[in-house]
Image 1 (tube, helix red, strand yellow):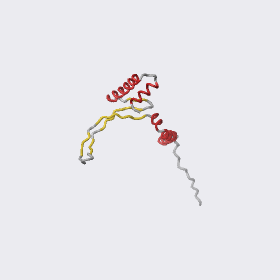
Image 2 (cartoon, rainbow, N blue to C red):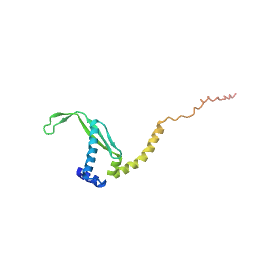
Image 3 (cartoon, rainbow, N blue to C red):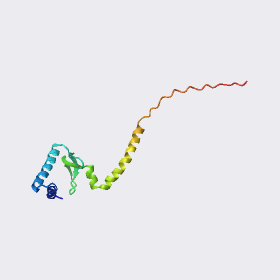
Image 4 (tube, one colour):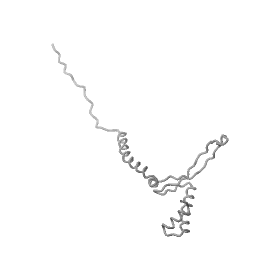
Length: 137
């Protein structure tokens, strides 16, 4: 699917003209780009989030000559898909994660219980037993 197909789908689904749907899509994309460019994150619950990712400068190698080169630092957009989006794309992985989640919670509870010190009522110190020495004569 490309941008034109998406505009057609929006127009069809919401009874808009293609021009109106195109303007709506352009506004959405421009807003996301502007906010990420400023350094703000754009989060759409269930779909995902767009963030600015800074990549540090590093050394590299030119594959054709083998010469060492410096690669400059860069700021790049990064998209992280949301849980609903991931589940829609890979239902089997979502099912595995859901099956693991209930099993993981009791294990965490057991770890927390084991980590907490058990405080018991202090017992009085035991007195040494007196032995009756019976002497035989």
